[in-house]
Amino acid sequence: MRRLSALALLLLLPTTLACSATATYAWKDEHAIEYRVGPGDRLRISVWKHDEVSQEVTVRPDGNFSLPLLGDVHAAGRSSVDIGKEVEARLTRLYTEAPPVTVLVVEVKSYRLYVLGEVQKPGELAPGQPITVLMALAMAGGFTPFADADHVVIVRRDEKGERRIPFSWSAVVRGGDLQQNLMLQAGDTLVVP
Image (cartoon, rainbow, N blue to C red):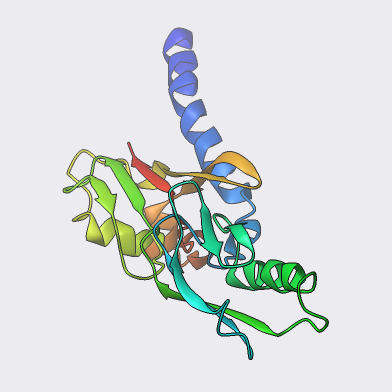
């Protein structure tokens, strides 16, 4: 009887630890999302009163694009505002007054996500706009009968490093814990055990 109790305790311990890890994750740290430019995205660079520099560019696979007079500008992983500030700073070396620069993302091609494991249609997703975890699961056709929907993991790699973000379908859908329904970032991978 004692062995049976000890075995039951050992079997329940991983479930208890997994639930407590989900409850204590700092999802608020993951919510601050600003679109980051990536390879393949098309940008419109507008420099006020300087048509010789203003143009539409495509971010190359190496993460850069080229502008006349400035050469290569690094764009991958940066916001359009950051890119505009760099272009403006470089232009101050060429002109006496820094002309205002606007960078617009004209076409998004780098926003790709991956869903693996126990979903109906695993693979790459290429939505035209940022989506949440629930949207990605819906685009992947939902769970298979063998899925462990309460132990989904989002694998994210960004400037904070690589990390595993827990997601519990029951906590979100039944429990109303909507903070777990994160906006996914380009390159995120959902793993459904």
